[in-house]
Length: 226
Length: 193
Image (cartoon, rainbow over all chains, first blue to last red; front, side, top):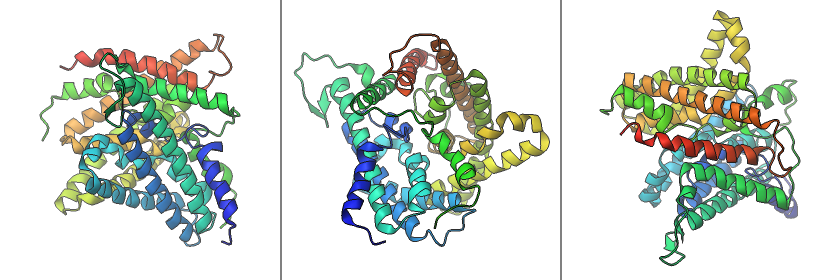
């Protein structure tokens, strides 16, 4: 656990841009599309997810030598579910309005594959500081992505930013962008922009349905570094 | 207690508020497994099946939690119940019908982290559905998921011969398609009243 701070920074930046969980790994798409119709909702979702990500990464990395290999996924999910319950209660305490707007999607952070993926591929194999740095990076990456989505959809879709009207009364909002269909369009557009700026190599290892295949393929031989 | 009729709940989950296209649940398999029509069917069937089983189980466990006044454990309990359901279904199918297991087998473990299943359990709780309403809701949601997946697979199949700019190819294009599909599903909004 003797980490050089600059290495930590590198891990953070990797999660934020180079291996952005949304744009590169295509993880966590459901909350990204579902609650990004306003900037406030998007930010709340991003922060709640980051909170759960960082807390569970810290706990899992502390317990990594004590969790039996066979039941590790179940253990991770339980730890994550506990922190999600905390996050939900916290959000309810801070802003009941936002909590209502997000609905069941706060609870659904449990099945956000960014968190389970980070636990499986990083936190369960690395020390506390490195895990937290990595989790912070991925959390920031997700928050950044969902903030872009929320900004794009709210500014164009309802002509405002965080509830403040931006354009004059003559502006006709593109309502389609705050409707479900617009979520898909906005995400497609952002992916195109990201691809244009830094082209993503088409590796097959993308999307969270692939995560579940990891345990069999990678760890079948019992090669887990603890 | 919710007073929606069973038919309305079914149509609502199937078309009007389609799980994939309106609630954005289960996007990962929607994007990942919709490349081929045959796998799309199987994935849809597997998800519908697990939805039905875990919806019934989640209803039972919620009644239990209500009885012992521990509803804050809802989330943790649901996650465990769904994971257990998936395991049980997998074992059951393997024993009783090896052919079905061959068809569904690979997809079953993937479903554990499918947010559509957990979302279904959470929705049926927050809407206070009774047992039969929950089951019909699960059927509708599963049908809607399968429908969206199959339509998407068909669309992507048609696109295979089209000429597409390099930059757009892949997920971005799939998302645009999904957007159009979602828009067309908005047309069903008047159905339920």
